[in-house]
Figure (tube, one colour):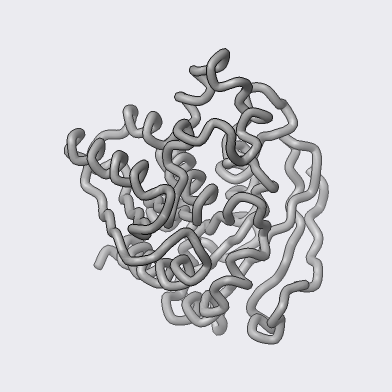
Length: 269
């Protein structure tokens, strides 16, 4: 694996993160490329307990910079809640799975294996699933729950805000055909890579779950369907509906509540 290198943080409002956030390059052997990630560290780490880590995934057409730009309070939240926040680049339209048709798309492997190992090796983390969580918005909400459920040995808690937890009702959207093939001819690919299918393998108590969606969001019905399926399976979870749509205003508000949920998980409050 190549040595990862630190780069200057190139974001609007950089001063907010001075000395507490870095943009790094992490090499993915699975995809043979370097991938940018923002790492937000709490100040005054010295002498404190090892840090729990929250992996925070961006949405479709976004990048590693989306969350720090959208929610500048993340710096303060990292301080207040004493956690490391990692915002990796998930590609323009990866949906955070390993594509069954395009071998160059391996974001599931990158985040759940390569990135986690890198962060634990280079930062003062509490390197176990009890202190590791993952969530995200929209496409990243799919990624948060999908990776959390499929990698329960890595993540102890998972979430989504406005998550695309079942993209099958939208077969013409978001370039999904490029990564999954035709939805009719490759039905198994489309079924097997959704969150709502992944929960078939989930049992109660294996993973702490939180997800929410705005009532005016085009993903509201698939989130309600997931909520009902978890109820039917008697799997404990937090599900919230709030006023709002599929937009930055909703996500900037939502993430504060999810951060508190994960803080309580890390500290068993």
